[in-house]
Image (cartoon, rainbow, N blue to C red; front, side, top):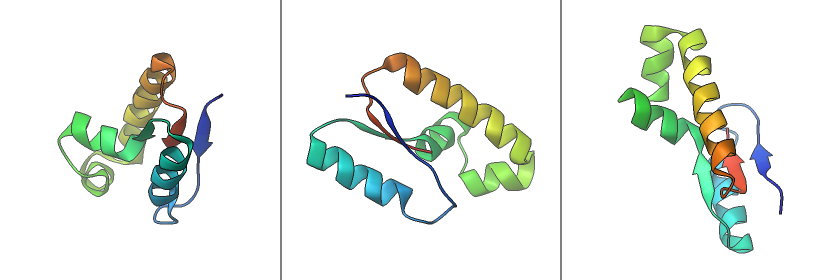
Length: 78
């Protein structure tokens, strides 16, 4: 199975759908926002507010590169 990336607007249900899809397929799931929050020690909204969208996108890209490199996470919510 290849990687499945869920993209869309904030709050549209990517994480909820991703968890359900991964559970149904019996595969791992990653929410990149959760990984950004772990890495930055702040919520996504705080990263946007205090550091700006550009910083959020930089960290998100680093997280995505790492997830893709892991290769074992087929369902990814961005």
